[in-house]
Amino acid sequence: MQRNKKRVLLSCLITTMLLLISAADSVKDTALRLELAHRDTLWPNPLSRIEDIIGADHKRHSLISRNRKYKGGVKMPLGSGIDYGTAQYFTEVRVGTPAKKFRVVVDTGSELTWVNCKYRGRGKGRVENRRVFRAEESKSFRTVGCFTQTCKVDLMNLFSLSTCPTPSTPCSYDYRYADGSAAQGIFAKETVTVGLTNGRKARLHGLLIGCSSSFSGQSFRGADGVLGLAFSDFSFTSTATSLFGAKFSYCLVDHLSPKNVSNYLIFGSSSSATKNAPGRTTPLDLTLIPPFYAISVIGISLGEDMLDIPAQVWDATTGGGTVLDSGTSLTLLSEAAYKPVVTGLARYLDELERVKPEGVPIEYCFSSTSGFNESKLPQLTFHMKGGARFEPHRKSYLIDTAPGVKCLGFMSAGTPATNVVGNIMQQNYLWEFDLMASTLSFAPSSCT
Image (cartoon, rainbow, N blue to C red):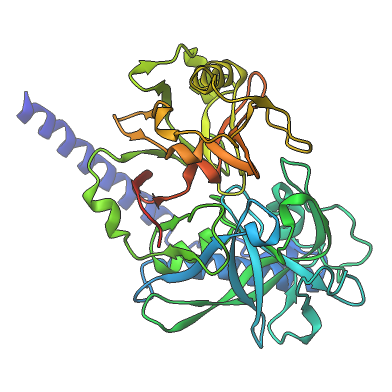
């Protein structure tokens, strides 16, 4: 049978060759002519043409250079924002030429990196002790034109606006966050300087940033901007991982830690602490709920008891699913998961007086003035696909919210809803995101 197949194949090859020879004889005095047009003829405006060419060349160069990594990795200080009156975590970046330092919120749910900015007379300037980036003083600041494909197509998901009175007008945005916060400004390409694990510094050129002339929301209290770490072509993560390797990690100190207590956000260097924690790796889905980092939670238990939570709560295809988010403070659960979790935990808090502190939008709060032994609370466990278990510290789900007041650190997200594991729940754990292997590894840590 095999020989017959080979004979048929050989016969087909010989026939094809004869046809090609015959065709060549019949057209030997003719030539094939195809019209070759430069793609620049597709751009009606020269300025937009140049900007799009530069953008395309940067993307192509990024692909060419993807395997030419820096030695070492990026190392950025990471601390709690409690001293600034916020439950966010901050790091510092240096933007522009010459480089200026800015304090920014670390947000794994945001695609856009932006700073408080003043450009051509527009911007807040220095308000509430916030530093301001004066764009026109930076030699490396380049606006993205509103007439470019980058603005009109690529940045649509980053809330680019259609306003474009002239081709030279910068591409503007009105970036909206899930908590109601917002930032308005213009897109630009800029140089960001970062520290490396080997003690040196690196300049990341052509990074997309937002020059925010106005912004509002409690999330930005004490901050000069946001470091966008979402899984997106335009985030800081995309640039850093393309240069230093497809891993990043962070360890969040206790959210009540003062600003002189910090750890690091690291890109590229492997986090050795996770190597000695078998069973602490779970799949990381990068396409399920973009641009967030989705994890495969399949259940929650209190102590030895698995809670009765419908399977569809964890199914992203039916409006559920779970993401890990450093930019959300509390943990948000779909109503069908929220109720059994908080009522199950509240049973162990019967000896404490139930209170409703002013300005605290949490349902289950208790007076702790008489003292409470946290060890009486059962261990809360998130069960994940592959057998991994995330067991947050008790202080991460019975949290201090005011003097003498403790609250269960959960909020109902409604139904159906995406579940969000917030930064307080993540504290005192080391988290390593492997974007190449699509895995999340984690291990308990003091983060100091």
